[in-house]
Length: 189
Length: 213
Image 1: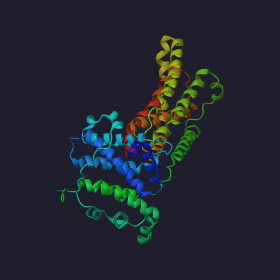
Image 2: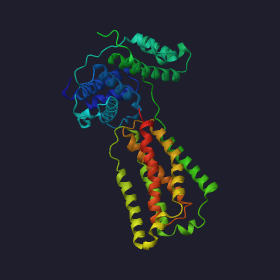
Image 3: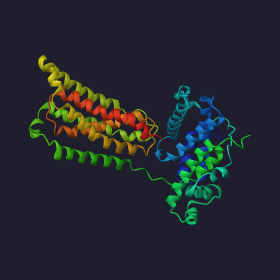
């Protein structure tokens, strides 16, 4: 890999994000993985006193916000300031909820490099979590997330409109994230 | 859930997103404000009968210019706050310019007023009506704009709410001024300022709830 092609480079991130927004799932996955490493590094540095679960929960919350607000990135603008702004907003928000607002030094973010991948704890396996969803959202997440169907195939299978599938999938993911954070810590270690 | 798994799921949620119609919310807000002005002036308070004669005097003209200037000056910058990374927008300069004009009008009237009349000149007769009409006109418009901004990723919700309320207050005061016959800057620079600040404060208070994500 070239010296100027580190995964957290502005150009690399922007390219992957752009291509992801155009529908390339692989690029988008890589983009989110790099971003989550950066975010994890920030959260570990700023809130090291929190439990691993809490920290990972914050990371996923930031990733979800980045995903659900992706339409607010303007392609002719740099992606890093955009990421920084959302990450800072969400991390401060979450730490404030936890009563740790004073631990955040907002000016430090830019300097952070990707941290080593944290050991991400599994509360429950994904199948169990998906089973805890209900209704259409569960069916949609099951088919797309676990069985790998496309949106169109899922729509045909469930006799739904594609847009409704998208809405339910998005909703299911949000619910899944909440569930995974609330779930009792059985199956851990 | 493992972060890797989670990201896999999100990557499958990659539907193309239409750009949220912030412009439509702005359009709706302006139409709403216009209708409110028509109701207030057409059905309620009426336009002041001497409007076109009065507007030629400098203090009266400034009443319209400062309110419109504040509304347009601030609201044209609000769409920037839709984007999370928006930093400085220069909005303080615009507000400062209007505030300076208001203060200048107030002081020049203060220099001319007879000491015994100062109190009654400031209080005027319609300050309660002025404030309540401006605030009531502002609130629905403010909410429409905040709902539009909610589609974005506002990272300074209190500030954004304050500025949106201030801008809307400015336009509402501009509308109200067509019916308001109090032309002494001691009155309007005082009460219009307060009337425009109230929606701003309300905006700062409610925006963090509406804009949260």
